[in-house]
Amino acid sequence: MTQTVTSSRSDARRRQGPSFLMALPAVLFFGLFALVPLAGVVVLSFMSWDGLGTPSFAGLDTWSRILQEDQTRHALWLTFLFVIISYVFQAPVALLLGVFMAGQQKYRAFLSVLYFLPLLFSSVAVGITFQTLFSPNYGLTPALGWDWLPAQWLGSPDIALLVVIFVVGWCFVPFHSLLYQAGVRQIPATIYEAATIDGAGRMRQFFSLTLPQLRYTIITSSTLMLVGSLTYFDLVFVLTQGGPAGATRILPLDMYITGFREYDMGGASAIAVLLVAVGVTLSLLLNKISGSRRMESDKAGA
Image (tube, rainbow, N blue to C red):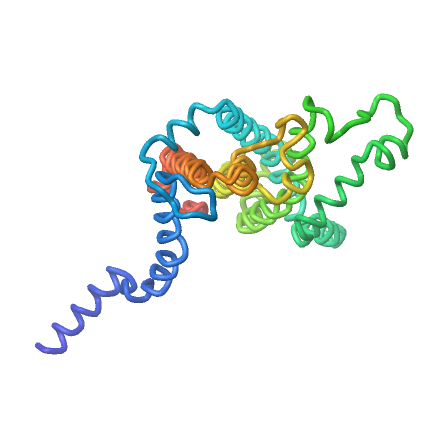
């Protein structure tokens, strides 16, 4: 009888999964280094502080002032454009590269190494390199001598944001390509063999087999790509520092300039909280649209 009870308890534990105690160190680490600083930033967003003196309570005045500033609204709009254009540029390129790199040919493995290299470089080094490449004095345009190329890549308000988005994509497309490469290699080869026997060509296999099998990889990559676009700071700072004329002053950079150049730590904290709120809302929205709770194995029925 005792053995039966013990066996029943063991089966119940297996069904319930691992104990919460196993996740406790990670939860404590997250709370100490993420939630506690975030709470401090939220409190500071209701303060008036220049970073040196004693903070004084300002209530909603800080929020009201920040939300009414044209610069903050402009930064919010630029961030929206940055996220959308960056996704439209990175997503298809990463998908196609990932599918290409999933092949078993040796030359594809060699090219995969080259495609992955940008992710290993320092963001500051990449920013300085591209800043030199786009220089109007000794960069790409003077070297090639083509009149149709812009003379001011980073100095023109009309195209500076697009150039920054290209550099950011150049750095982070390899990561998402790696996700797609791993996803494609998990698709059973028998599915493609059956499709080939049925007469399906490469394009038909891509749209009818590969894309549906990658749907959850696409959801994961899209979430990381969209939410991650809200945190880009170092590359933008090195390339343009928010210029020209504020054309690339997205929210993370606006937060830095407000806090450390204008000495308005309360306003910078309010922008930081706004940035977190946008990121969390976007994550929840993507989670709701994707229906992640209904996700099943991609190999179901294979």
